[in-house]
Length: 147
Image 1 (cartoon, helix red, strand yellow):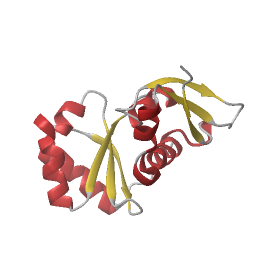
Image 2: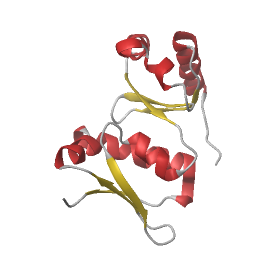
Image 3: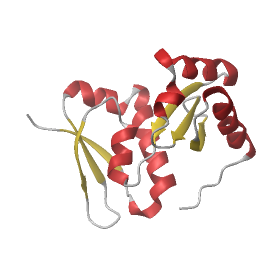
Image 4: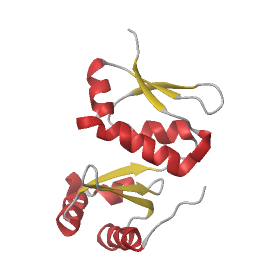
């Protein structure tokens, strides 16, 4: 899937590389929620976050925006699971072709975490799943797993 990375996004990716020695595969500037979302190369999350989140704090002060990071994964299911962390995703079921991706989370508290404040996490899942998997993924729906 072709992703269009503009000048500003490239600059932010380079800033991340300089500050953290980690590699971002993509960067989304989300003005709606005043944040920058980095998609980090698998295995680089520890480097990107830093001890006690120090690298994220430094990046936030340099860029003046909230920083969020998601570890990339090859399959839509693994990637979606990473997007919703720390909420515990129990399973993901695909609807019919181009149908919704039903994401089941464990508990009511995890549902709140997965949705995020004002829906910011569900929006992040929609943006990134479309960006990386395009028409392979339809809508992303969150469902609380019945106990």
